[in-house]
Image 1 (cartoon, rainbow, N blue to C red):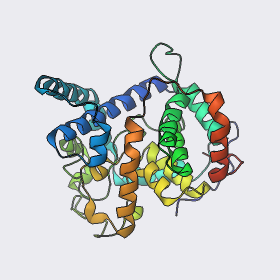
Image 2 (cartoon, rainbow, N blue to C red):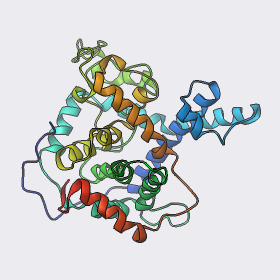
Image 3 (tube, rainbow, N blue to C red):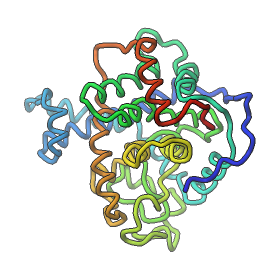
Image 4 (tube, one colour):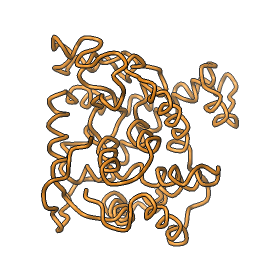
Length: 323
C-alpha cells in the first residue's frame, strides 16, 4: 500500500523557483541515450520484434552505423556527470527519507489537467522556436497510443506519465532525484545499469547487506515489494495507486518505464513473481510511445481536452488530486 496522505494540504500551492528548462534538457539527454541504445540493439540483432518494428524505417549502412555509434557515445558523455551524482546519492537511507518526505503530506491540490498546465508554466519558460509545450508532448504520446487503438486507460497513461516531474518544484534535492533511469536500492547494483562503476561512490555499495546480490530481498519477492530509486516515476506511481482506479498495467507503465535495466536488459529477473511477467509485457508495450511518439503534427490541446477530460473523470473522478 502507498503511504497515506495524512496532513491537510497546503492550498496555497507554493512551488519552488527552480530551473525547469535545465531539468527538461537533462531529461531529453537521458531519453536520447535510451533512443540510440535501442537503435543499436536493432542493428546488433538483439532487439525484440516490437523494437524492430519501431526502427523499421531506420536501417543504416555501415558508414551511418559508425555515425550512430558516435552519437550514442556523445549522448552518454552529456549525461555522465548526472548519472555519477544520481548513483552516488540514491541510497536506501535517502529513499526512505524521500518517501517519508513526499508521501506523508500534501503540497498542492490540482486536477490532472491543472497539473499539466502547471507543469507547462514551470518548465516551458519561453523557448518558442524549438520546443513543444509540456502539454503538447504529453498529448503526442497519448494520441499515438489512441491512434493504435490501445485501451482508454493506456491512452490516459500516455497523457499523465511525466506529471511526477512536479516533484522538482516540491523540494527535490536536485535533478538526480527527479529524472534518470531507475534501479532497485537495498541490494547490489547490477552491472547492466548505465555507468555501473559510478556506484563506487555510493555508501550502500560497501554495506555488508545492501552490497550482496539479494540484499534485503528474496528471490521471487515481486517488484511490488522492491524499493526503486526515487524520482518522478515513483512519485506519480504512489499518487496514482492511492487516488485513481488505473489498472495494474497502467501503474506498472508509470512506475517501470524508466527501469531500463529490467525491461530492456533483463536484469533483476530473480526478483520477479508471476504478476511481474505480465507487467513486464505491459511496460515493453508502452515504452516506444514514451520515446518515439514525436510527430510533425502538433496536437491542438483545446480541441483534444474534452476527450481527455472524460478519460480523467473515468479513472480519477472529478475532484482534485492531492500532490
